[in-house]
Image (cartoon, rainbow, N blue to C red; front, side, top):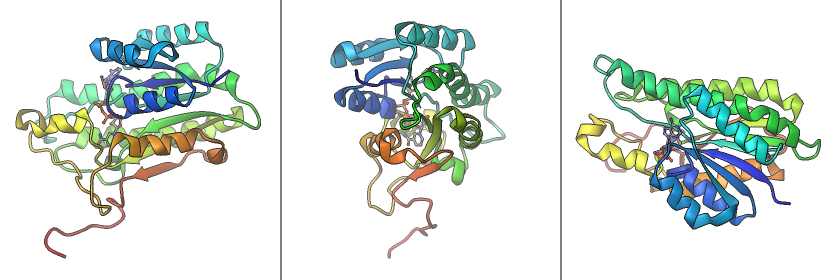
Length: 255
Ligand SMILES: NC(=O)c1ccc[n+]([C@@H]2O[C@H](COP(=O)([O-])OP(=O)(O)OC[C@H]3O[C@@H](n4cnc5c(N)ncnc54)[C@H](O)[C@@H]3O)[C@@H](O)[C@H]2O)c1
C-alpha cells in the first residue's frame, strides 16, 4: 500500500503543488484548507487518492475533528506538510490588531495545532528504517525580516523555532521534523500583494541570484527530498529554497 500524507493549505500554491506531486507519486493525500470551491476542484482533478478536508487550522476544535477523521480512515500517517499560511502586510505602527492576531494564529498556532494532532498518527507510522516526516513552511522572512511585514516575519521565526524544538522532542519517536525557508515563490499569496490596497507597500524579495523567482515546483522538489530515504538523518534543519537570495546582499544597480 502507498504512503499517506496530510497537507495543510492544499487548495493553493505550494500546498496544491505538493498534493498534485504526491498523488502522482502514489501517495494518498488528505488536503486541509478553508472550505470552498478550490478544495473541491482539486478533489475532482486528483480523484480518490485525494481527500478534501475543510478545516481552519487556527481553530483547535476543527483541527481535532480533521485529524480524528484522518485517524479513523487510517491509524498511520507517514507525512504531514504544513503549508497553510497567511501574509498580511502593514507598518508596525499601523497594522490592525486583528490582522496581527490572524497572522500569528494561522501561521504559528495553526502549524503547532496540526503537528500536535498529527503526532500520534505519525508515531504509529514510523519504522526504525523509515521515520515519519513533518515539513513546515518557514520563510526567508525568518532569516531576513523585511519592513512592512513584521507580523509575518515574527510568525515565520516562530515556525523555525517550533521546527527545531519539535525535531528534538519527536526524533526519538521516529518523527523527523524539518522546515523550508523559501524566498519569493510565484503563488496567489504573493500575487495578491501586487494590489496596492492589499500590499500596502510590501515588496517581495523578488528575483534571486539564480535569475528568476521560484515556482511552487521548485519548493515541492525539496519537500519530496525531505520525504525521501535520502533525508532519513535530517531533523531540525531549516533549508533555504531561495536561489541564493539571503546568501549575500546584492546592492541595486548595474553589475
Ligand atoms: N509564496 C511565497 O513567496 C512564500 C515564501 C516563503 C514561505 N511561504 C509559505 O509557504 C506556505 C504556502 O504559501 P503559498 O505561497 O502557497 O500561499 P497560498 O496563499 O497560495 O496558499 C496558502 C493556502 O493556505 C490556506 N489557508 C490560509 N489560512 C488558512 C487557515 N486558517 N486554515 C486552513 N488553510 C488556510 C489558504 O486558503 C491557501 O489555500 C505559507 O506558509 C507561506 O507563508 C510562501
